[in-house]
Image (cartoon, rainbow, N blue to C red; front, top):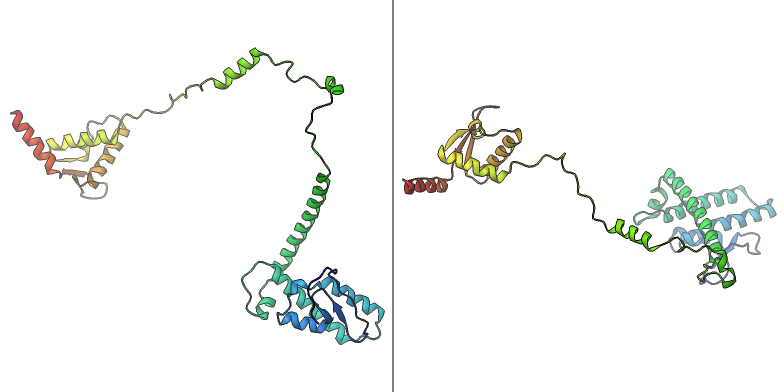
Length: 273
């Protein structure tokens, strides 16, 4: 017989009939074997079945009527409780949807079940500790009012040693601009890619083809050579120069390809002549 969930305690009790082990729960009243069949058929949620309470009731009955029990009945009860417990643990563990009873029974590793049980026990102890702390804290009331007038002389005056000069020094320290950052250890940038591009353009307009050594012959520092090489790569990307190399680690030949600049240079020289 099924019943709705009511305000009764969630426990298990023995019916007067001595031949059948029956339970009475908020959602079910009747023989325990029928309850297990309904759970395995997924007609009752296993999480709603208090297995620990049912086991205690079964043990109490066993002590009271030990001679009337058979070995088969006790063995069956242990096996079915183990299956229900595994079902319940499988429901509590986070996992994908279960399609069948076999997947629910065999889809969880015993080591994982044991580890999760330890985690659940730790969370349960932590929840109890937090509940106790919250209960104690609920009895505490913060005092928002100041001390009574008859006890005011017992409290030190916090503003006694505060003067206008002290406030002025504090404000000056807080509002003072930060000291300049010392950048003497940083090497200043003396070469830029744009300047290197212009130098290469002027050099190749005079001689449309030159080696890389000739292009960097006027460089005095290593950083200038690096920037000049980056400028060559930028000109090559824009299609203004053509680069060639006879072999690995060989001399790089640079050839100017921008005819517009070359014609403008020739026209300017002709006008000047």
